[in-house]
Length: 630
Image 1 (tube, one colour):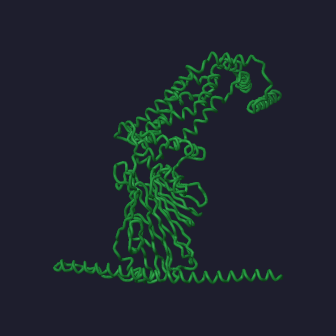
Image 2 (cartoon, rainbow, N blue to C red):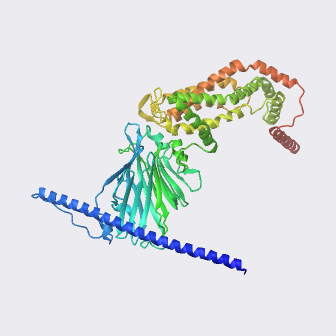
Image 3 (cartoon, rainbow, N blue to C red):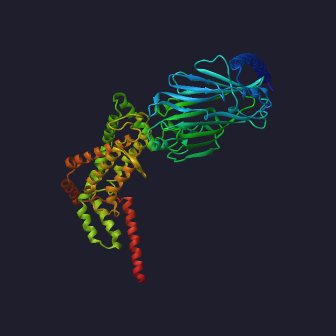
């Protein structure tokens, strides 16, 4: 080996040795500093506990003095349950509450389990005008279950606050022994819907089982009813979740009558308990290793006015030698698309916008226009009207092409009738179809010209179906007789319930059904193109579809019914204008006849025509074979 190589390797080895020595020294100093801080904290905690005990003793003596002649019974100190004086004391304390709040939310905590006890979302109210409380009460749970020389559940213990407490931060500890404790550190940032939580296990590494480093976290809350219409609120409430390194948000399903559950064996980045317009989300920075999710709905006549119970049993992996805390944060806030998106965790996927195409239309077209209009127009009924007009302007060209193509087929109906009369027998159906196709080709009419342009409108119709019921902007926004465009409107409350229809009459749904009927009636003559229809198809389009949509939309978002009604009315007016001023049947017929009389270029047949010719040849061969057999 060359001398230069020996020197280089020696220097590298020396650098590694110095680096290792320096790191070891720094780690030892950090450990000593941590021991010092923990010792100070324990002294402060013991001092605080003594002060609390002294105050309790004074209160007890005062009560004994006042009630000297009364029969006072004191509960004797229970025997040790956990075999640990620290844990025994922590299980026999009294419940106390602490509050953190900012401009957007107010969170109340209980020292029992160190859990969020209730959450108030400011600036919003329930449909009944009450404060919007996302959850409240002792039945809500956030607890850890693990083995540390014995099975422990933090929900059974009263944590002690670490003084001093600030307006934006709260620290609570559960001492397992004099040198080991669990600390919950809550922090509420200013002007945010998020609540940070760091959980530290200090001095507990020796208590954990070496064979298992799994910790179970249970999170469960009861979400009350907040909106108008139990069915509509229930249909858009579920549990959503997201996998790490994947932007797609999954859920346990919408429109579940009773609820749903699922055990997920893969890692989860976050879990959301999702009501129609508000959500509680728990995010794990290190991800959950698996999770058992379940939600169940309360009955509509539940006296406590609760909507649903959501629970998640989540698993965490704790490194025995790790000194870093387990980091989490909560989101307690509205399902407002832009607000959710601002947190950069794909929270906006909670809002059910539809699949790829439908979701793209909503996110890239409908929402930006809706937000732009809301800056300048204060009434959301007028915003929906303007949005409908803009959509109709965008779709005018395919609508005009569709009407023009249908008009061409209509003026050719006499020629098609002649072909039908020429081939009345069923066995000549293929030949009849060939001649009709030849007629259309000669005159330049596309058989699908009236259908294909209309297909552009269906994605937008479905996008509206997704957008309006979940649009946070429409929540509690009134227009005309509708008090809330996100829920149904009612002009008459019925004393009974009609199956599938409900116990009220929605005027917007009724007007929407009537507009569908008149549009179908208007198009009956236009659609008489000579093409064969299934028996009863005309009656179904004229009567059944409007009636079905009336029943369907009676309990739905009045904003959606209002949009469909506007769309139908504008389409009726648009069709009348096109038919009266832009389409002349006589002129169209003259153009088609001139095209048919002109010399035809030898254009290649379409694939549909080729398949039709092949099918006709096969049919002819079969008929000839049958004749020979006879």
